[in-house]
Structure formats: C-alpha cells, structure tokens
Length: 233
Image (cartoon, rainbow, N blue to C red; front, side):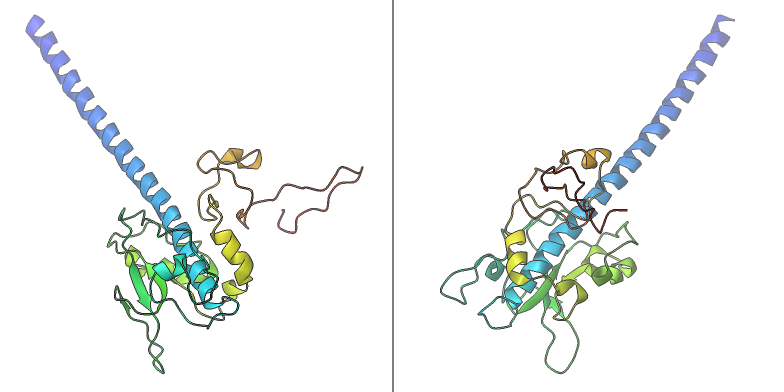
C-alpha cells in the first residue's frame, strides 16, 4: 500500500512539473512578444527622427534643395557658414542593437525607382537591416501605410519625399524639435498615468512634445475656462 501511495505522489509531482513548464513557456513567449512590440515602437520613433532630419536638411533655409550624402551630414550640415544640426546623433537600431542602417538612395533621374545600399551617395531615408518579421500590421501613419505589407523590418523605409502630406511642418521649427532631447514617441503606447503626469519611461522635456498628446493649459485663471484643444474628444 505504501508503494502505491508513493507511486501516486511521484505521478502528481511529474504532472506539476509539466504544468509549471507549460506555464513558464507561455509566460516567456508573451514576454518576448511584448518586448518586440516595444522595440517596434522605438524603431518607428527613431525612423521618424531620421525622416524629419532629412526633410530639415532638404528644406534648410539658404541651402540648396538636395539630400544629404551621409547620415553624418544630418548631424553637421556644413553647406552654410553657420553649421546646422538636423539630428542629435546616429541612433541605435533597437531591432539589431547596432548603429548600422540601410540607406535609401535618391531615385536616379527619369526612372522613379528607388535602390537601397550602404554606399556614400545622396540618401532620402533609412531602414533597419533586420530580417525579422514585424508584429505590427496596422494603424500606421498615412505616410507609412505600406508598412502593413512589410515582410521584414527592412521593408520599413523611413523616407522623405518633397510634397508628402506629412512634410508641411516648418523646417526651422522641425529642426528645433529634432534637436530637443527626450522627445516622446507618438508611436509608443500610453500608460494610464500619462494624463496625470509625465511618463515614467521617458524624461520630461520643456519642448518637442508629441503632437498626439493633450497639452496642458497655460492660460491664467481669470474665472473662465481656457479654450479646449481641437484634438480633445
């Protein structure tokens, strides 16, 4: 009888170990997906900074309307006597964890095609070198709507083209926003405490706030409420 009881205990122990393994495997998979989604949001934010820097370089007041020859030109634009900075630094690709980016070349004249490589030519944007398959497949901004068809992160090309609907921002003010450290990402998910204070995942700033978040009223209290934002629900 004692041996039979010990046999049941052994079986229950094996069952508990199996269940624990399944639960841990499921938890690990969920964590990996969550981590990849966070990296995707960061890639979208960083890619947008590159695109806006190219736009600022192309539309720089007093400069020739041309694309940069390298990413370093975005950090130090020497076309005019007063050096301009369109980008704070060469950001790390959150997917590959390196500062190496694929460069999107300017289309050859009279062709309308776009080639990609890492050679030192005039570039219109960047893309990740990762071959991983994206998780995000919807709810992209209009100028990134083709990302929903991407097979790998290489297909997420952050390109500036003159005349894009998203390029109506004043280049001078855009340059100031680009150079402001700690700019929050409009692509990152908002935490429930975002409406009551700054997000704990990013330092607060004095400028360059996301255009998608509500702005607190700065009007003095005169007995009447301040005009509501046109973006409020």
